[in-house]
Amino acid sequence: MSSPYRRRKPSLIRNLWLYRHLIASAFVLGVLLWFVVINSASVQVAFPFGLGTLTSSTGVIILLSAVAGSLLTMLAMGVFFALRRLKAGPSPSDDEKGAGVLDDDLPPTDYAAKAPEGLDDAPWARGV
Image (tube, rainbow, N blue to C red):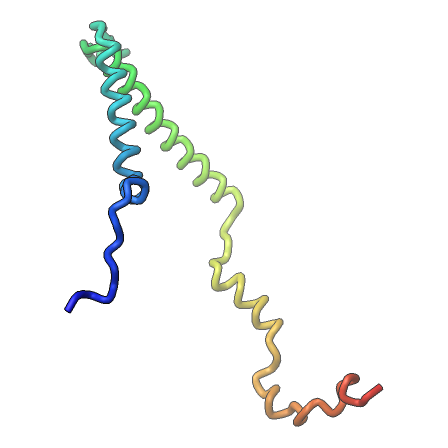
């Protein structure tokens, strides 16, 4: 007996959508490889304070400097957000903030015992 479910035909569009992250990563890596190959002139970088020198191609040096700049930016933004949080002072957690507001909006716990049966005193129940 065959399966009651029909098998979906393979679709190129659906496969591209499923593997979009892999395709995007391959594209970015391809562009980086092309960038390194095109910028193949040899260059020597001397670090300050006599830390040493680095000899490589122009493309690799540019990519390494971009990575270093990104890491420094991440570090600076982390310090900035930490200092801003310290300056603002301690903030209550989400549970503590929401608990007070929610408790004020709720009826008392014995509300059901004190409530009358039905809707006799409602304006729409009087037939006005």
